[in-house]
Image (cartoon, rainbow, N blue to C red; front, side, top):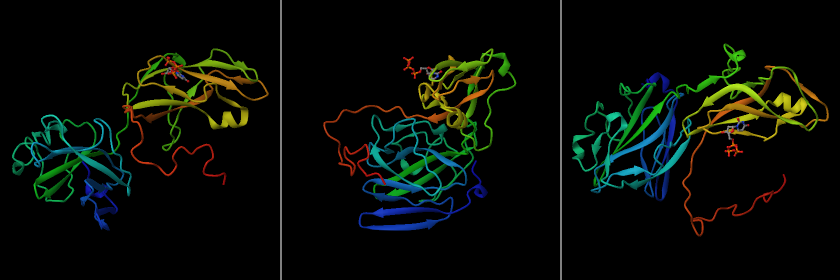
Amino acid sequence: MVDSAASAGLATTRCKNGTSDHPQRFMPNQAVAGRAHGALRIDRLIGSARIRRFQRIWSSAPRPGGMRLDIAAGTAVRFEPGETREVTRVTLGGNAEVYGFSRLAQRATTDDPSSGPSGSTLPALSMNRLGSAPSPSTASDRSGYAALFIQQPTGLEAYFAIFSDTPPMHLDVKILDERLRGALPAYATPGSAGLDLKACVATPLTLAPGQTELIPTGLAIHLADPGYAALILPRSGLGHKHGIVLGNLVGLIDSDYQGQLMVSAWNRSATPFVIEPLERLAQLVIVPVVQAQLRVVEDFEQASVRGAGGYGSTGKL
Ligand SMILES: O=c1ccn([C@H]2C[C@H](O)[C@@H](COP(=O)(O)OP(=O)(O)OP(=O)(O)O)O2)c(=O)[nH]1
């Protein structure tokens, strides 16, 4: 649940309607819908919470159709506080029936719109207001939803956003080297992005200048979700002061990889470097990934300012 105390601050929405642009300030838990060229723009600030994804939900008009926000299934439109995102709406395909959303909005879009979302615990929300409510009991994290209702000449449209406090991500880890039991990598500070990976070598290992060695880390992870990958990056101190970087520059850990994490250690310096057992050698950063579906085109729809310019085309300074 998102309480209003967490919803401190003001959000700004710009509503464009063809010719004019009306910046508007409004209090948390309010929203304004602007329809610009078929797009719905919502700007949302919910304390530290993020709108995780927009889930279109239903619309009564025009039959048979509802509209949905034009984002790929399972992906998200992320809003940071104060940011605005523009999401185009498209007509629902298939039978235009929408189910799911923890049953909050379970209905066919051809249902009578005046009845509101069926099978729901949706509280009464007024038109064009953004509301929040406790998440359905099935939700394990502290998430909530926001609903936006728009009265169109042709009927009622509703949009829902699911948001959460970005709950911690759980990562399955296998310990392959007993020396790491009780000494798992940890984020050094609350703001750290990387987990240190240790060199699970049995004895000190000397890396000669220019030499590259694959060093075991004693850990295996399984990200499982293709929406994530992990990157192995050098530790800046080792790289800058001692020239110990990565032979592959960056290690990419696929979400389906279950083997031991290995660090390709490269001594790019002119002096030998001794890697001590359990020395922190590199760091692991987990990042979101979008798998794109390729769509072949003869030409791009819109010419960009940059075009094919690159490699310093914008100048040096
Ligand atoms: O620094 C690294 C880089 C990769 N890996 C593991 C995880 C990754 O998922 C797997 C394969 O890596 P990648 O796809 O980069 O290697 P490839 O050379 O393209 O091999 P493959 O054909 O197996 O994909 O190896 C590491 O442990 N450390």
